[in-house]
Image (tube, helix red, strand yellow):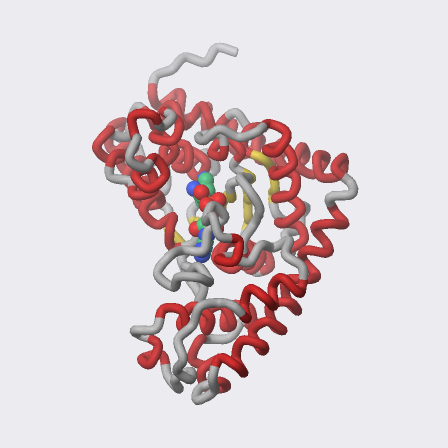
Length: 334
Ligand code: TYM
């Protein structure tokens, strides 16, 4: 049976990119009746230094974001990574399977480490082996993510295949990346060639899930565009990254195709389209941010949900880890 796993880092707040590229699709998988396991990857977050108090808050706020977006912590398993030791333990085994050369090719490491890679943490370098462990600890088969995680998922497949080959087993499944829909790569509102990101220095470049209605409308009104009217078909967006981005955002928010957006707005200028997009965005996002605020009033309840999710996650991951140790030749006598 298919089993979906995915994770989000609790480093800073959630953006519209996280919502459309990940959360909204997590909810769809859950609502389709698939077994779904969603993780706040706090151990990934500390690959760069985090203020402990802020990390705790961001983890709980992320949990609130999951729930406010429609994740039901009964139907889905929702937990934070560090409460389930199988992630770290399996990551060590994968550190011994993955090759230095594979990790050196990871573009996210190159981007995040920047020019001074010698000064990056070992954890930042090994990040993709922990990500592979997150997924493989559950024998997950499907992983919904945004486009930027594609390379990491290919590495996960390589690690699983090498483990199976090295030990002569068919133990770890080869996962399917699920990168689908109009918003797998939501771009910056200031530059249509850059990904929308929580680490962009300009707050105007992104919509945060916690932005109020006026801020959302203002950011979309000021979003960079060109002076042309919207085209009537997708070909007309080929050389227009900013226009394409706004059309994709509209499509993903409205659950329609970009073609359907252009059928409605083709021939109209941004003077008409941006206010319509702002109304739609406020309509979809305001209830989520209001619900997050409400949920954050009761931190004890959030912690209870995370504890319950971690216990359920542990019950799935631990037997898989035990089998893995046995395959590798590590003795377990208690
Ligand atoms: P993270 O925390 O950077 O992002 C969480 C999810 O949001 C997606 N995303 C976007 N999608 C579309 N447009 C954007 N602008 C955009 N920005 C972010 C990401 O693709 C991701 O799906 N390494 C992962 C977390 C992780 C994980 C895992 C994911 C750890 N272990 C196991 C899946 C399975 C990360 O840093 O995502």
